[in-house]
Structure formats: C-alpha cells, structure tokens
Length: 506
Image 1 (cartoon, rainbow, N blue to C red):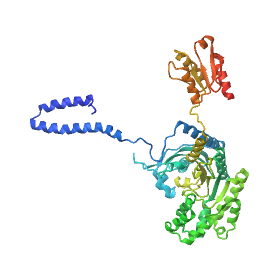
Image 2 (cartoon, rainbow, N blue to C red):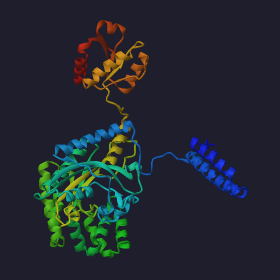
Image 3 (cartoon, one colour):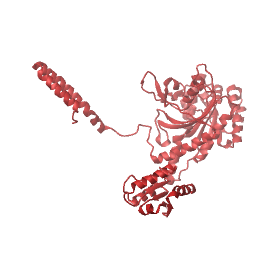
C-alpha cells in the first residue's frame, strides 16, 4: 500500500488533535466522516497502480511506429519526391494539423464521414485535416494569394478501416504539389502528369500507367445516359469503386442504393468500360450522344490538348484515357488522374503486393472560391503522392533482396587501444566535428579496442582514427579502413585533409 506523504501525516495529526477536543457524539460522527475521506484518498492513490497492470501497450488502430531502418528508407523516398518538386520550381508550405470543422465539411462527398472530429476545447469546433488540398485552398483565400506553385509534405487522418498490408492507415503522410493561378489551358495539368512520371520512374517501382479523365466528361455522360443531376455525385462515387469492385457489383449499387433505372446503369456501363489513348478521345468526339453535350465537349477538347502536350513531354505512352476514373472527391471540376502500378518487383514465389493507386490528383477550380467572402475563384491543379503505399512496396522489395540498411551516416570512429585516453579522444573528435566530419566515439573511459572495431563493422562506419601513447608521442594518428583493415600513420595536422580526401573518393 502506498504510504501517505508528509503533508498527509501532518493533516492527520492536526485532525486527531481536533477530534480529542470534541464531544463524544460529534467525535464519532467526525471519525466516521474522515475515515471515509481517508479511504477515498487511499483508493485514489492505489488506482493508478491497479490500472497500470491492465494496460495493453500498443499503437492505436491504423497507426504504427517507424524504426530507424524504416526511417532511412522513408527519408530516401521523401528526398527523391521533394527534389522533384523543387526541380519544377515549387515553394514549401505548411498548415495546421487541424482546421475549423466548417472548413472541411462538404468537400469530400460521402468520404466526409471519415473526418476525425476533435472534442471542443475552447469554443471552436475542430477536425483533423483529411488531406492537404482543402487547407491549401483555405490558405490561398485567407491570404488573398492569386498565384502560387507549392509543395507540402505532412500527415493527414482518415477514420477508415485500415489495411496495413496494402499501405492503408488512419494516420499517414501525403506529399502534394499544386499550381494555383489563371494560366492557359492544360499547361500546368501536363506538368503535374510529367512530375508523377518522373517520381514513379525514379523510384523504380515497376511499370505503371496513369489514368486520366475529366469530371465534365463524366457529368456529360451521366446527363445523356439519363442520370438525374441530383444524383451525379452519388453515381460518381459508385463509379470510383470500379478499381476495387466488378462492374456487376457497381451496377447493383447504382440500381439498388442510388435508385437508378437498370437501363440507365447499362448505358453508363457502355462508356465506363472504355479506355485508350488519343484515339479514344477522337472516338468520343464522334459519339452521336456525347458530342451533343457542351460540358463533355469542353472536357474532350482539353483532353485532346493535354495529350498533345504529353506527347511533347515524351510521356504519352504512360497515359490512358479511362472513363471509369471518377475520383469521388466533390471539389474536382476538370481533368482528373490516378497512377496505378501494373506490377511490383517481387520474386516468382512471392505474392504480388496489391496497393492500388500510388498517386492521384486533378483540377479544382472552384475550391478557393468557397472560402473567399466574395467568391473570387483561383483555378488550381495538383497531385498527391501516396507515400505509405510506395513505402510498402520499397520495404517489401528490400526484404526480398536482403538489402542491408545503415541507420546512421557516421564517417569516422575515434578509438583508442589504451586506458586513460578519454581526454585525447574528446579533443580529437571535437576537431573532426568542427571540420564538418560525421564522427562518433564510445561513451566509456576505457573501452576495449576490439569492441570499438566490432562496433564499426556492425554499423558500417568506413574509417577509424586510433590514438594511443605512441601516436601521441610521435605526433601522428593511425587511420584505419574498416573494410580492408589497412592502417596508415598520418601526421596530426594532416588528418582532417586526408579523411576528407578519402571520403570524397568513396
């Protein structure tokens, strides 16, 4: 039983003294009352100890820790993605992890139910951000920014059933690139698709295809097929499931849940099962019904121009015009696209990893205007790289090929074979740090040399500098290559230069 603190003991002494002065009847009542208080205090002190034994130590559902080895892989992916964004002239931006709830509502269609709402802590209703696009639009409207090319890397949260194997989580990281501003048609859109191709090719994930379509073509298709305008968004959300469900199941959902007539669903099916390149765009121009819809014609005209630019960029063969692509988010207004891996680099005896789309995006010309008091529009187009899914593929590939990962970047280890040389090691490592060399030493006064050398081999440190009595006397330092185990004596004043030379050659 936990002991009462000093303050409690003094309180009990005072209480007992007071009780001795009271009449007997009152004294009994007071003792009974204070015994109840004492019991409550002891119970409250014991409660944390009782609860602790029942605690299950785990991460929340849909989240995970990342080990140092995993973080090395993750940072390499992020560096490649961000360097591509910078190569295309993007500025970095950050926004809060949570927004006013009203900022996020009615922007994501039926996915709005996946938004994490926070408990009211001070008079504001808040929600964790669902993506990085809506906060970017809010930033543009709030700061009256009319033109910007930005990238943003940050965590987002979605309250869905996670599938860890496929790289789906409730907390995950997104890498976004967006171009805001009024420009000539399809030039920014084409650059976004070029960026997606550069990143996916650079990461060497395997062959991929980028599906493209246009929300105006979809809306036009729904109109000529007989879908009521009030059901456009609902039907669009159903179509968006075609990458996970068969047409038969999607048709059933549209008829049974959305209330479409079977013949209307069948007419939609004739279109959404079409996919191809520029030839399909030309074919849709000749479609007797679709060509009569002005919205669809606008979308087809932009897609034709887009394919011309993609051909100039040399990536047209990676792009597929796919009428089944719907992108269920409500804020898309024009071109939409989604990158899908055709295969992963897996061994023949290993099951392929199905991760779905690894990048997606589109045009959202009306989103900023939703936040502007006067409704001023800022046209925007952008993309999002699915970091978690890409990481799952790269991680599996590294396990398959048994790649060893260094978790530090240490270049030099400062060692000694003798006792009482801590001060000399500290002077030496300070000299290396001041020269910008990444260095370590062992946190012991008298470490064994073999232990120090084994540590270097285990962690992949390439060079060791060794200082002892003889080296100190001769004014030299031994420089050892961990891989070859060769040692040379270097004059102390030339040590930094020699290390830098070796590191630049490796």
